[in-house]
Image (cartoon, rainbow, N blue to C red):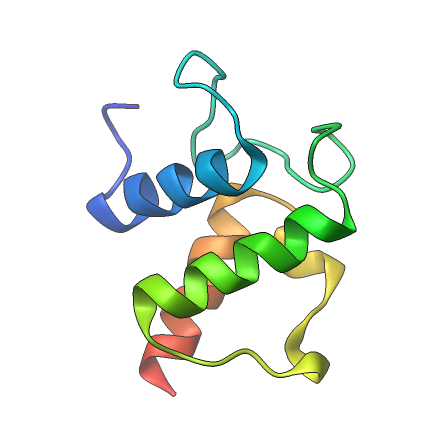
Length: 86
């Protein structure tokens, strides 16, 4: 979407890749994820975490994995920002 930040656009691209969604699937910062997209299951969460770790060069520990992180695209972006600032 036009109002998405570059970081948000990259996260959307990583989500599309992890969930194998095509570019026609509508995603923006407010898009609900976990529980709203059938493809977003526990394996997709692990795949997305791996993608985020690889792209942004950080490590996510088991105790940081919380369903709330994957509520929306924006909550994922906030998590990435927090990891980058840690």
